[in-house]
Every structure is written in C-alpha cells, then in structure tokens.
Image 1: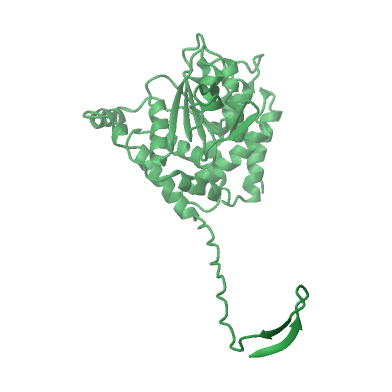
Image 2 (image 1 turned 120 degrees about the horizontal axis):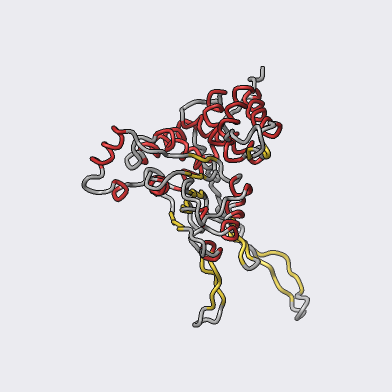
Length: 353
C-alpha cells in the first residue's frame, strides 16, 4: 500500500512512502521468574542438627555428654571455647571431632614462646616470578581453629587473636580480610604446669563464651574407651553429619529463640551482681551479658525447647561467667575462688516477678 509523497530534505527528490498493512507479530515479553526466598530453618531442625553433632562427637569423646553439649552450644551461639584441663583428657580430640562432624575446615596452632603473630595470621611475600607482593594466609584462616596451650604463647602473639575472635576479621598491611563463617576458636591450656607460661589477659578471656573442663573419665567410661580404641582411633573414620552452610543457618535461627522479659532480667541481674560483689575486683562485662543471653538460646534449642527458662540459665552460669571475673586477693576474700563467688551470687539473686 502506498502512502503520501514527501521531499527528501537532503537530495530534494520526491519520494513515495509505502507501508505493510498487515499487523506485525507481537514481540515476546521477557519473563523473569520470581526470586526464590531462602528457606528458613526451623528450631526443631536446628535441634536435630545439634543432636546429630553431639551423637557423632560422642563416638570419639566417651562419657562427657555435658561438655560435648556445651561445645556444640558454643558453636551454634557463634562463640569461642576455652578448655582448661590437664594433658591427655581429649581436649584436642574434642576440637577435631567437632570440626569433622560439622564439615568445617580445621587447623591446629601449637603455641610456644617463640611463636610469632605472622605464624598465626600469615605474612606477605614477594613472588620472584611476577615481582608482585602477595599475602600468604596463616592457619587462623580456617573455620574451626585449635589454639593448643595458648598460655605458652607470648602476649604479643595472644593479642593477634583479638580482632579475629571479636570481629571475625584480620587486618594485615592495611588490608582487612573477612574470615569464613562459621568461625570458632577453641583454645586449650594446662592449669597445673605454669612454668614458662603467660597468663591470658582479661580482654582475651572475655572473648571466650564458655570455659569448661573435661576431667578424667569414670571407670566404666574409660573401659569403654579402651575397648573402642583397641583396633584404631574412631577419629580416623569420623564423617561429617552436616555442612558449614547448615551450621550458619542454625546460628541465624538461634537468634530468633524467644527469651521472656523475666528471663532476660534474671540474666542481667546475675551479671550486674558480679560488678557489685565485694569479693570481686572485676565483674562480667556487657560482652558477657550478650554471650550469656546467646548461650542460653543455643542450649534451649539443643534441649528441644521453644523458650529459654530460668533453669537453663542457671545451668550455664558457672561456665559463662566464672572466667570473666577477678577475685580480690586481700582478706577476707583471698581464700574464695571465682566459682564459689558465682555460686553465692546465684543463691542470692532472686527470680524477677
């Protein structure tokens, strides 16, 4: 079909326009599928993950159910663990079994007085082939890190852990590196042999969510352990029962566990009491209150409950607060230990409401 004549503005020629009267086919529309929302893990599913972790770890650690449960609670609460006990009671095995069960990367740092911060964090080196300076990551860049005999490292080396434990990052040469989640430090120390050691400063202790002791096994448990280990060590055949992404989902779900105002007031009353107690030179910090709150949430889910109770708070007071306080050395408090003082605070602190 022809249309009107027009004059070309460039050459001045008369041009007849034409067009096709048949309608053009509609252009296909771009259809974008809806973004799939990430699946939110439920609290019963978190409880099941924790139960599988505990059962798997107990294939290696015999007769220490409360301690294994606490270690899993610390992992789910995004905290760090200090294990203080004599040699040979499976402190290292607990860390390895937890890492293997969770499917996390694992590194062990054996502390000595000559250990340098760069031995933990990593260092920069010059690549002779490219001429470029590159950063070589140290063992701290793992998801679960065992710092064995931490009190044998110098204060300078101990301080190299502070940023990683507090903010899950490492700064080297004015560059900050984020650590992979989940991230957990498990440190051990021997409370008996103190020769040639360096006491952990309070800032370091305060970054550990829980301090626990494994202790010697009972007769029946030790017999079971000997028989189980007869042919080979169970750690050699231990398989993971979950993965790091699942652990991270569990950590996020733990934050959603409801805590009543009454229970929250009781947690804060206990921590506040440590700051006013006459026998204590130093009380628990606000970081301690936050950790106390999160540990109670984690333990609640592990036990299969929906809300935090006063009984669960009382169950973990000693392991969460004792290492955060300092007892006065002068009379009449010199003979008291931190655990005794904390127990007195528990007995004297009324439940709100």
